[in-house]
Image: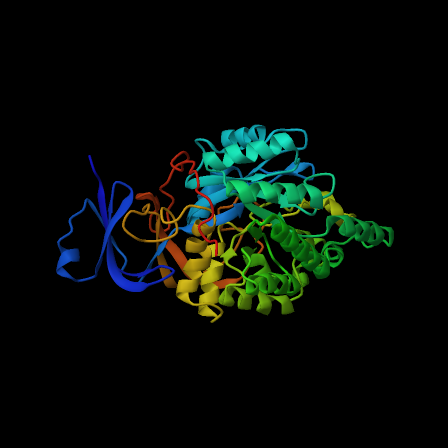
Length: 467
């Protein structure tokens, strides 16, 4: 039995087009678009009709950077795959790519199996995995080839967190050389962790223990230096490079310079760097702990450079780096020592709305909104055109978006499993109304109608965004 849905009367927005069109869905896939009101569109029949008059019809968001259930700093991220993917759906995101973790001494396969077990049967939306590579050796390098063949085509390394995830330049170079051969994409956390540890030790010795010092020791210059070094290592290896959570204007400048040279170097930023700043880290009574993440929030004057980078395509993707820790009992682990505050912010539910606010505020266009939140992440990580667009053959991952609805962001109304909002009290224009995942209604007129287990694991091809 086939099931058909038609979405009528909305403004369909993709990365390339805006058109008043009806959308026909059959068996979880988009089968046709036709201009609204035309004979072709009017002839369609379906079991379910969704009226999108006055609304946007956009592809479901692709959040290429989340950390559900991530162990970190003696605790673990507070969102499970079930709660986190449900919250993502509420926010108009229909695909996440999470990070499986290889611990030192463990194989990549062990880490991937662990994360598959966490996610399997629990997700409300579709998901894939990147692989965090913490232990580069000959066995690891061979496993990278196997994982690429299986659809895990991106590998994250860290220049930060010595003793946990850290890789030295030699290990990074070896992994990059392997990815140059097998088609994988290296994702880099670019901060000079060795130097940062010295600055942390010195700050604590001076009695500088409050959350705001987290931002002061993780200096923008050390993000820029690591970004530059990662680019040069990738250049030596002949490999593409994707720098995650870019927060500093100096790091954007390094990416822009590399791209001007024609290198396959890409950058991601996150909503927290576009909307929050060191002012939040400095909030009194330990409230600043809510905003501790790495790379850290920067002074407000960095925001303009990030928005400009998104407009000029020196930054290609906005992901969330969603890694929530409750204020009570988790962030509080760092009272008296900022270095013990678990690093991460909640945001998977807020990304699409915050970026739409960027449209409202004149920072980006509507099509650019869809490009950085849907299409490019899908292309970057081998999911396009199955995900990230509205076109015949694509999965029917579709959001009906009300561009005029007003909302106030609050922990009281969000659906992430965390006891605060990083954007508490922020007024936004625009809100998700209805969400379909592979043609199934997950959010129906602001009501959750999905289920754990609907979301399926989605293997990926290699990067489709190379120059």
